Amino acid sequence: MAGIYIHIPYCKQKCTYCDFYKVTGDLKEQKVAFIQALTDEINQRKEYLNGEAIDTIYFGGGTPSVLSFNHFQTIFEEIYKHFKINENAEITMEANPDDLTELYFNSLSPLPFNRLSIGIQSFNNYHLKLINRRHDASQAINAVVNARKYGFDNISIDLIYGLPTQTLDDWKYQLDEAFKLDVEHISAYNLTYEEGTALWTQRKKNIIKEVDEETTLEMFDFMRNEMILRGYDAYEISNYSKPGYRSRHNSAYWKFTPYLGLGPSAHSFDGKTRQWNISSINKYIDNIKNHKAYFEKEILSEQNFYNDYIMVSLRTSEGIDIQNIKQKFGSEYFDYFCYQADKQIDKGLLEKNAAYFTLTKEGLHLSNQVIVELMKTD
Image (cartoon, rainbow, N blue to C red; front, top):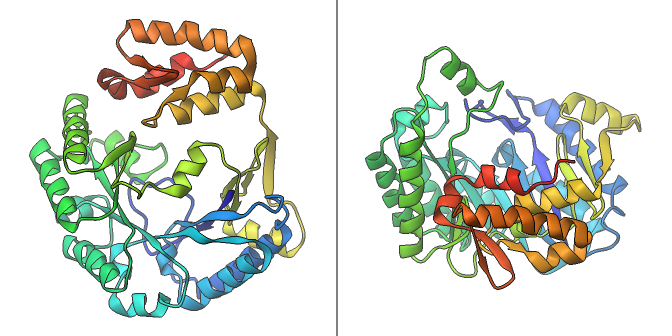
């Protein structure tokens, strides 16, 4: 099994917190050239996954929902021409709520999308404006209603907590609104201030103030408890699903399943190496057109592979499989992990259940710290 990720680098406007590669503006002519380059890349890299059947296709961005039916149809035709797609493959599109009108859904209905990931982020119009989102709360709700009307029974929404001026009571209200929508999956992220973003600059200039750590931890604890009470599986630190609705695309990534990344800035993994495309749409288009290199590549060292495994696995509810470490990385890494893990257990940050190591409640609060301690640096 394998997956395909397609990066659509277009947004109508930039959110203040986002550091993903994207461009803005009405770029109709460039979009035509981009779709051509993308289909050319699909053709050029059709052997990358060695004939593995495709179980997930994920359109991310950027904002994939700025594309039209014709754009998607062209992309799908090229993918289905060169890859074997499983009959029940999970095919996801990220979307902005204001794009998801009945007219737009009607235009997409012939396409094979069966999962939506809607970037709601908040139901508070003040916070939406603060982070420069282009929708309001009513559009967010209508997007889910419209999706149901057009047959989507696998809907995920994104939420952000720890927004400037946000209180615990406001976060409780956000979750209540989300639960009313009865979606199958919720991804909820603590706001991060990425260097180079508008949000980073605003904090640096004291235009906005970061919510204190104690409050964000209260938000996290309340959210996690409520998710579990409402029947959601807390299967990763930031991801919650109803039974049977985990994101298959993300889960495959966390299990190191090979995937092909297409489009500018997209990453790929073939089981031994990582590859990433250049983060420039113009260079991406020109280099593909002129048969020049448009990506960089690295062969993963054993240490990098081990560290990646620690970083990804510890965030999941299953945690780290100690036998997996022994089999994949040998006795040196096994002994190192056991030594470091025992120290985290003594601190009350890790616990062992059979052959698996998972974060405790306190460990969830300090997950990044625990991950660093378990990584190998020499």
